[in-house]
Structures are given as C-alpha cells and as structure tokens.
Image 1 (tube, helix red, strand yellow):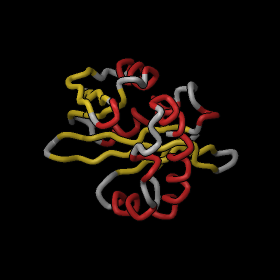
Image 2 (image 1 turned 120 degrees about the vertical axis):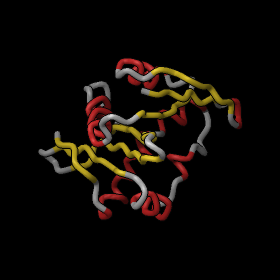
Image 3 (image 1 turned 135 degrees about the horizontal axis):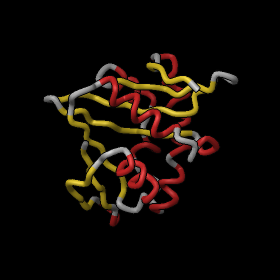
Image 4 (image 1 turned 90 degrees about the horizontal axis):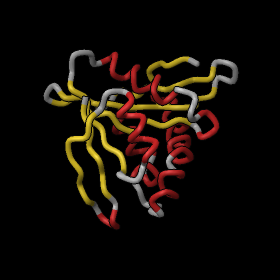
Length: 149
C-alpha cells in the first residue's frame, strides 16, 4: 500500500469511495443525509484547492482504497474525511493515513471530529493521541465529538 497526494483526476474515485465508506456511519446513525454522502463532485473539486488530500493506493490493483484530507488555518490543522474501503478496514490503514497527514504538518495542533456514536472512530483517535475537548449537539439528535492533538 502506498500513500500519496491525490490528483484532481482522482477526485471522482475518491468521492465514490467516500460515499461507500460513510454508508456504515449513516447506518449507525440512521441518518442518511450526512455531508460525506451528499457532497457533490463540484464541492470536492472546490475543496481540492484549499485542502491537502491524500490517497491510499493498493499497489497490486492500483485502486484507491482510502483517503484523508486536511487544511491549515491559523496554525491549527483541521483533519477530515478519513476513510478506508470497508474490505480494508481494521488493518491499520486508517492509522497510516492519519499519521501521513500529521507528518505533512509537523509541529501543529490537529483537530478533528466524529459522531459520539462512532466508537471505532473514537477508539482510533484516542489510540493515536487525540483528546476530546468539546461535544456539540446538531440536528436529528446527532452529537459531534471534537478532538485535538
């Protein structure tokens, strides 16, 4: 597996994979209008210029099997959309993507968020040194847990 910067041409594949990977989150929350599922290609293309987007590539098939993105603002790095194809989950690839994006912004403070019901995500972030600093209720009974490192 190889982690590298995504190209503009990768965006349609990354968006398709994002929607596949986030379906488990939507099922967990019973909430199918979460932003990762409703994001358009045009929105992702706009993010491309403001974010660093990494992709995880299976070297055998050359398929994109994971991704993460981040943007820096005022010395703080906001990490988002960390996902891995469902068939490749629980093999350490999410951790690898997280560490790769952190290496690009060494010495910065990192922030991310996930659903309070996403126990596997929370466990991953805590294992990688993130600590909760805020919870925020949003529509439909959904609660976000904000974490930093």
